[in-house]
Amino acid sequence: MPRKQAVDVVPSLLQALERLTVEDLKKLCEMLQSGHKLNRKAELVNDIARQFQDNLEKIWQQLDQIQKAAVAEVVHSDDNNYRNESFVAKYGQQPNWGTGDRYSRQRQPSLLCLFFYSKVMPDDLKQVLLAFVPKPQATRLNEVGDRLSNTFQMQVERVNYRTSEKIIEKFEFPLTVVEMERLAPKDLAAVLRLIQSEKVSVSDKTALPSAATVKAIATVLQGGDFYDDEQPQAANQGRGSLENIGGIKSFAWTALLQVGGLAELSNKKLVLTKAGQKALQDPSAKTLQTLWRRWSKTTTFDEFRRIDVVKGQTGKGAHGMTAVAGRREVIAAALGECSVGQWVLFSEFSKYMVASGQVFEVTRDPYNLYIEEQGYGNLGYEGYHDWHILQERYMRCLLLEYAATLGMIDVAYTEPAIIPADYSDLWGTDDYDFLSRYDGLIYFRLTALGAYCLGLSDKYVPPAISNMPTLRVLPNLEIDADGDAIDAVDLLVLNLYTVRVSELVWRLELQKLLAALEDGHQLSELREVLELRSSEPLPESVREFLDDVAGKAGGLQDLGEARLIQCASSHLAALIANDPLTKRFCQLVGGRGLVVMAIHEGKFRNALRQLGYVLPPMK
Image 1 (tube, rainbow, N blue to C red):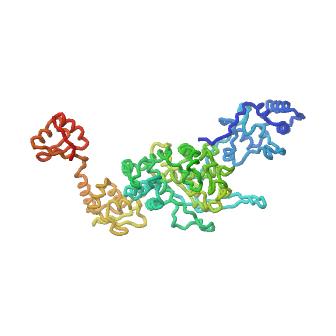
Image 2: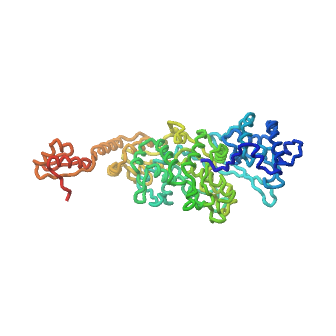
Image 3: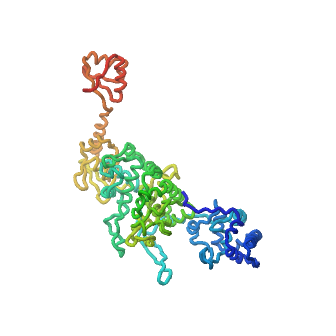
């Protein structure tokens, strides 16, 4: 979904020159040093065209390296337009176009202006240049390797408006590195279990979680959410109070599971669908892949709504917002070009996208969006809706809140309030500690799970995980836990199947286990946790207890609902139960009773009528 470009077709050099004023043509002629004093427009046009025909390669050789790169980028592209954003992202600077703006009488164009007219190269000129202009350097994504420092350093160039001097400020921030590939499968199971226990409430109108629900989900996630409200905040060191960042992973799970069809709304609470119940037993990687694929296509939620300081996204403004699936597709394609296991600086990834033409728009009409106040804070003003203001915020949200939550990327981040603001020119942001809760994302790396979710690999092999013993299962059916190391998912399983005796002690009891099995849970899940997390083999008494429960659970089978029908006589009951037309659909019970399964009731009634009998409605 490319950004909008003002494309001006210039089929020939002569036509391009004809559009210029005599004054501009004279300046171009001066650079060519023809030695002719020409004043008429036709003479000027013909002289420039002649010199291009005779000395084009020589003129091109006079360009500096950056100017040659600008020519090469367009000569070897699909169209004839110079795109400044992409060029600066790739080369770090603009080419020299001369001095002054194009409307100034003191304007002095550079030699590069002979090749472009309103930043468009004439088509016939491009065809000739193709013969000798080499291809530009390939656009490469700079990666930093498979290891990171525990801090991040950056430089910011400021301008002292009193002296007009440029000042370089240096900053160093602490980094938090989270390997989401290892955590996502456990987080998935934990949230599914939490929903199964009917502890996840959402709005019946928006299907979004409340603040209390977000906190409840954060407590079962491995290591909690990305930002913990209770931990000391580095932002308090001289920056004033930190705004509430809020949930990120814990918010994302409620949206992902609903869109993925694993959970649905029922009486203001999320409940597991059949697919959600099945996901508890299925390989987590396949479920995570399905969640990403369904999320990437959904139109029910726009991640940019999470950039809540930007107002005007609803109502009239909603009509200007671009299709979310198209945005995700562009970002996912660029993400797929990252090397698995190699850390990438987010700012470099953003530059790479722009430089390689993998760009998108958040809105077609930025005048609908604003900060604080629609007049002064309108984002339609020049410089107020640049790539780093809108598109980068959307990218950070998609990557940190959804791709990372699903384990597709590992992340390294800091607190958003301590990052130097790149939005200080926007009206109404003076008191903001950050523009979005995702501003702290510094690095990320594509994981093997991410490559699998993106369809870059057919199979996924999870990283090896050492099973640290966290439980001690005793012969008296009690379970002691290591409070500092117990897994949140294991904690949910213990609470589901066993009786909690104290803070770190649980006990196996028949009635609690039978109640869990009656609700559709699997005894194998409890047995797996006990065997994997126990520091010793399970005691014989515990094995016998679990085997006995398994036998009791498998002794009965629910075949479904049925109708009990009483006949007027035992003779009639025996007749119907043994007649070839009806005996397939009923079973004789006692002397005069017939049992008919609910799924067979219609067929039974039809066969009964053929015998000459009818079953009246229930009184």
